[in-house]
Image (cartoon, rainbow, N blue to C red; front, side, top):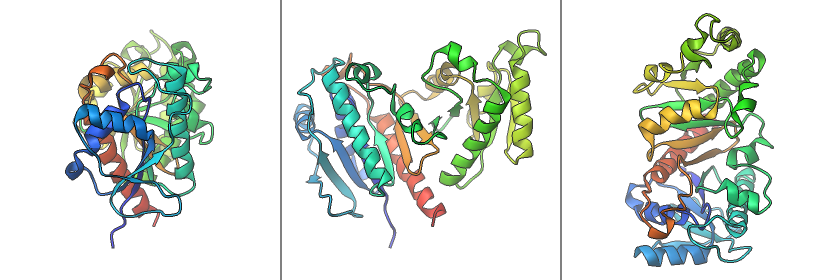
Amino acid sequence: MTVIPRIGITLGDPAGVGPEIIVKALSQGASLPPAAYVIFGSGRILEEEQKALGLSLPLSAFNSGTASQRAGFTLRDLGLPSGIPVKGQASAESGRASFLYFEKAVEAAESGSLDAIVTGPISKHAWSLSGVKWRGHTEYLTRKYPEAIMTFWSEPLKVALLSHHVPLREALTRVKARTLEAFFLSLNRSLCRVWPQPFHFLAAGLNPHAGEGGLMGREEDEVGEAVRKARAAGVDIEGPFPPDTVFRRAVGRPEVMVIALYHDQGLIPFKLVAFGSGVNVTLGLPFVRTSPDHGTAFDIAPRRVADPASLLQSLRLAAELAQAMLHLGA
């Protein structure tokens, strides 16, 4: 008998588009991969969203005493711990709720009850207002899993980030040979756990023209040294390449992943070619974690015109990676 993955879905910020795209995506049941889906969120918010959209989901109540392997949708109703947030506005109430949904889903995955988590978009500002000290999902996960790596996947392009939600000045201090070498090795190990085919990595340089032989900076010396050591350890990697051309080398090549040295270096080209269809994947965890590549979109949340395409891709990729992890770990 084929074992289907157990996938947790967090509602995200209840004042944003998370509830809307979840209802829209799950209402397309026939296009979803077979899985036991568990929604971590508020039943009240989901009921309001279904009513507003004219859609209905076949939700079963969550039972902690059973770990279902049957395809379908289950709601773990965690309520609204601080009251009802205002649609379209970041608040302490919405931040506290979205963090609770995420925290409980992670606990379930760590206990072995879930194979994957798909996280709805959260507001970093709302988390801060509520007193949550982490800037986002990945930062929270990194506290327990130091090898957690933020990557972005799409059909045309895949990108891994050396650093993500930190100021640019701080990000640049991490461009050191020892840090880079450890990152390259960790990225390769993490991918081997969830993907059956090996990746070819292209490391971006930091400066224009990859430093032009040192005329515009020496950071590429650090990248080059780390690339040589990683290659000697068996990693299929090249670089550093000029950052304005390296992404062209990877577009349309599914087996190639670009390693960007800071957030916007990787996310600007990625969102240019895959916005709305890309998926945020956290590697280096004992479970799969994916997320849409967009935020809460508070500006359009009250109008309910959000596109669920990225969430659908997140669900499909979560199921694919979870199946691969189950198979590779068997």
